[in-house]
View 1 (tube, rainbow, N blue to C red):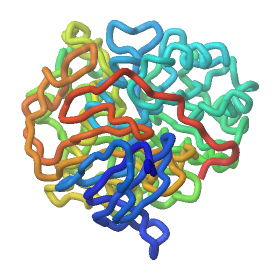
View 2: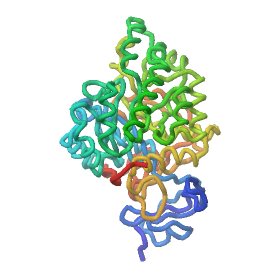
View 3: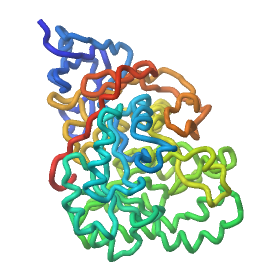
View 4: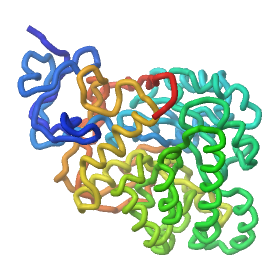
Length: 451
């Protein structure tokens, strides 16, 4: 008698701890799935399943979530689109992505949001949701726009965006934070200081000056202002891609109002070496900084200051990157490499697998209130990221699914590799090969104040 549609057996599963509210335990067990949901966890759960995945020798994590990606559709699809971006996601072990609003046109209206959902239908390999971009013209509607059940949240660009998505005025920021209840994701750089300092690097054609132009003070001034305004508005914020030691020390003291993201790029690359080796391929905002900052980021990862790891996948073509600095665009691919890089760091002893599970599985789902995501629990979506902690592979440009076809980690040997990506009980990637057709669906979010 068939008891389940699908099951995993013999995997070392990363499960919520029954004894610690925020802890994890690893247990060799089986997981049964029916109609896309987990229905049983236990040694015999696989018996009677129609399709059984043998995970012997492998680790089964909850489905990994990349909560910051830029997939460029509509308007910039020569760099990326929803199909290619999500294809890269599942090849890298990611089961769900949260996509940013700075497309052309920007995602600032209900019509544009619905258009993105329509574009995704039948084309995305991973599950997906979209941010609404905050702009002066949609402040009054934000509180209604963010209530869409497939909207992960509101995104504010305090620096480094284009057109009306740039919110550098403090009064406008306050109005935005007043309109709604959900946690707001923020790119925090001081735009006025960026404009003033650009003249210091004009005509240099030297990408090593990128962190000098966008210096620590540029980040710190903006983040301090953000927290001040957030407190005045009574609105929780999520500070994206934090890159400086000073910000991490400050944000550690304001955890009641702010959660924190950092990126594997900042944890893995460091200046000046990355600019000397990669040139503008290492250029992103905020910049890759020196070892002092990197060491502070790692301390913040391990002391609980950092809540989430995202990739900030933001592809540009090699032709665009070949322009003269500082006229080159900032950004790099990342959705496909975030998990291999972080598994490598786990093997190097820089963080535990349990901490990685918190940062890339549970916390993105918890902070944004995604329904049925982020944990291996009965009743949750049957999303699993299956990894081999012992496998060594070399990241290469030829492996990258992005339409731009490159990664700053080309040639890097890593230990730890995604072996399968399973979404709602569907194996969509196994052994670096896509399986079937795109079956991604919109992520659903609970209404109310985000945690």
